[in-house]
Length: 191
Image (cartoon, rainbow, N blue to C red; front, side):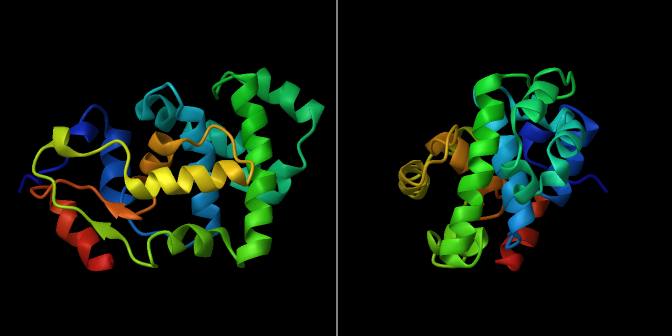
């Protein structure tokens, strides 16, 4: 039996796998939150498909997405990252990732976990949208605007309201699967 999926994911197999297994699944784990912050900030100005294809290289380059290790990166690690063809070699994005690891740890210390911090913007539960068409799905929301402003005040970089809305979608703070997508109801039941 053929499954109906959100049309954005049909370009290649890894995209379908990501859509079917991860996108929109509510995550309360800091490691997952940090991974997607790194990946989403690298995406700025690029397509998610570009980043998804480089995900494993990012995992290796950024110490399995361990914020404590990434926060300790210095000049030698930056040089290695700038010479790594498996990732986006943009110095500002690399420096932002290291900065964001440090800010991430500060948020963990203030709130107990980054997950507690970000889910507080959602009152602890995901927003379940009901979009019929891909063009109806927004690129920002009042919550992503508020989150971007707060994170900017906390010193995070390359995480504006569009990037953070994509982060919210990826980590299940919002369910933006289309109504006819087979994952819509599965994700809805997780919330």
